[in-house]
Length: 169
Length: 169
DNA sequence: TATTGTTATACTCTATAACTATA
DNA sequence: TATAGTTATAGAGTATAACAATA
Image 1 (cartoon, chains in turn blue, yellow, brown, cyan):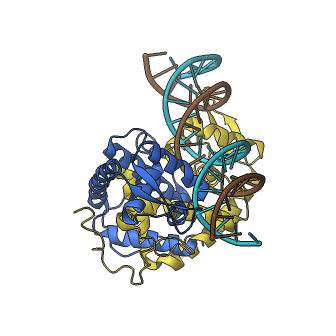
Image 2 (cartoon, protein in one colour; image 1 turned 180 degrees about the horizontal axis):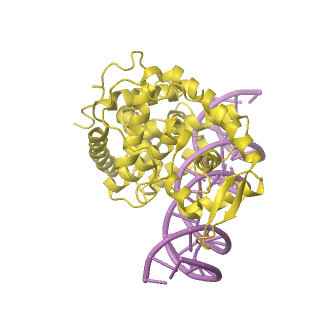
Image 3 (spheres, protein in one colour; image 1 turned 45 degrees about the horizontal axis):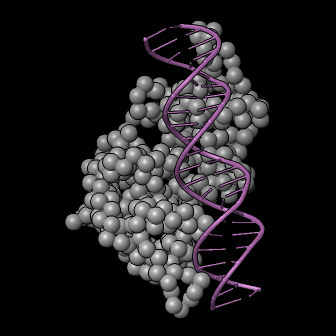
């Protein structure tokens, strides 16, 4: 039987969510098998989470990659584009325009790598540090909202997501 | 301090995942604050999960919306496009081309709604039922792989995702 | 006036392939 | 030959706005 193990999980969460979809008047639609499909809920949750984060930042046209790339540079000064590409799970050609945007906005700078002239290292500017500080503060607020929703389940949730990424490739 | 509650979750999972990113040679990159960011891991997990599901189906160009829409129609015979739109959290203009594709492939049919001539109801064809059965079987296999990864945490994971969607909007 | 569904359009995200310059 | 980064390009996914038909 498909999804035979659904609902066996222990009592980490006590309240439960109605099993019909839609935030407004879509009541009555039965999700059926979709409701037990992790991928389906991952997609909805990712989308809702990003929109929520963007609301917190107040930046209507926030790009998905900016926070990720700024964070990676902050935590790994001198990181190369290709290392960013691997850490974020995107192709290098996807990273290039993000870096160009951030350089154009003067949030980061490129610095030559004397040991390998094909490559360069990335560093935050002061403006970039300020932007990242703002985004990180928003992320903290946003994360507090998630804690308010999932409570003590946040830790296991993160751990489960990490393992899915690590083992599913 | 940002993300001050990280890691407090109970012992639902015992093994833990290395805190550096990348599936291959990207070791050494520190994720830093990103590693405690639910949104970051949601994005990676959603992407990894969909790719994995597509591999199981063997359909290289599987469209993201097909399984969702076929499932919703199967569980709600006669459902309208706008109800699908609400249940899946997408704009109605996003649903139109998906339905057109599925009709063109003869997986679903439109049936006039005598009570409201603006609208129509959707139903699976036999071919559509067979396709859905295949996709559902793949989803079951795929889900077994997820259970192998997260074990008893699957239930709480689903519940947490549902609540995030429901409360974050 | 409001709703259903379609169309036109545009923008973002993403990847593949071809290119350059180095290694 | 292989790698770092860029460019050109294409495709999927999404949304907004305007529209026709109907309620």
